[in-house]
Image (cartoon, rainbow, N blue to C red):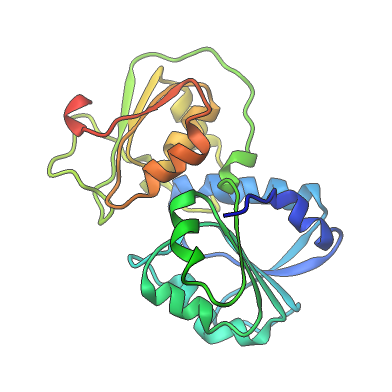
Length: 252
């Protein structure tokens, strides 16, 4: 699998306008969106937002990064089924991808296709299955965010999910799932201000972990229901000294 700096790749679209498909997400996903805006702004790339009901405005389509191309969700898959034939070129920003249905949709895409995976497991999964397009490895767009250093807060915050990606039979006491406090395009202020209040963050929410890590809090990241958290930790997060991956929930 080949690593390719996403900003270097996007240089060829500098000072241009492209279409952009942005799928629904939670407040943690806002880190992806704000990081993506920072990246595109640095290249003076403008976007026109599109969905399944809108026309095509440009020949090039960017698809928001994240974890939507997995069996749990269908937004990107449905958009590609309905709209991919309209575009000359489609670029999927750093994503976690698994599932044969996703591979089928990608292989049926007629456009020039470039897929960025945000960890090695997804890239390895696609390597022997994707017959259409190029696969590259690069970090989640949330890592384009930067935050000024602030003094450590106090105490620990538990941010554990209760949806289909959870593997917990029981949530820990005093759990606050901050991702339900907003949506993927909400300003980051409230989320960041909350994380800054604490010294330690315990979570199975990937982007809560990324945000808290960038804020230089002590972070303990736990598994979700598939490989996403561990894979992104191994590829991107383990280089930070203030985060650890905890395999066993009994070690909270």
